[in-house]
Length: 149
Image (cartoon, rainbow, N blue to C red; front, side, top):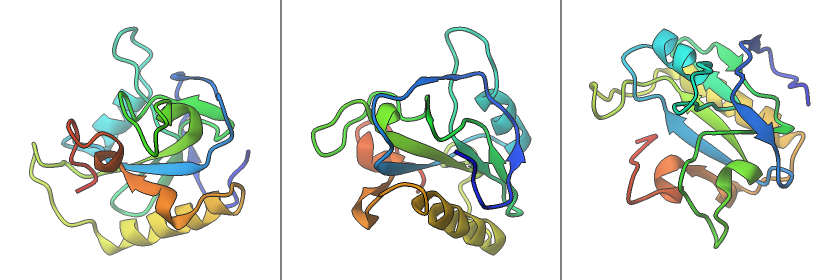
């Protein structure tokens, strides 16, 4: 599905078929020193380390579309929500550029926050996603993750 929000296409090869229509959104921080490094990692086809997300939001508010929403991106890992375990198969993953706790977590800049809000509104114009199903990575993998902070 094509977003109505202005996005920059940066296709990731790291996806497969969905198991269900998306009914949740998982927010992450990138946890890397730069947005450029995070984008390269999310688009890296190297076997064994392949990860992706549907979108990456830079600190200046630019939104990159990496995986089509109709496909399953690989962002949540071992996770569960409301008794469901295949979080990747039923969610849209949004990576928010931030170095994270390991590299100097900082507040999200206003242009980035505005872009994330606009992106969530845009995604919800296409899919039925309740407020309670917009979650952080730490909500679906609390023993492993603390993002987006």
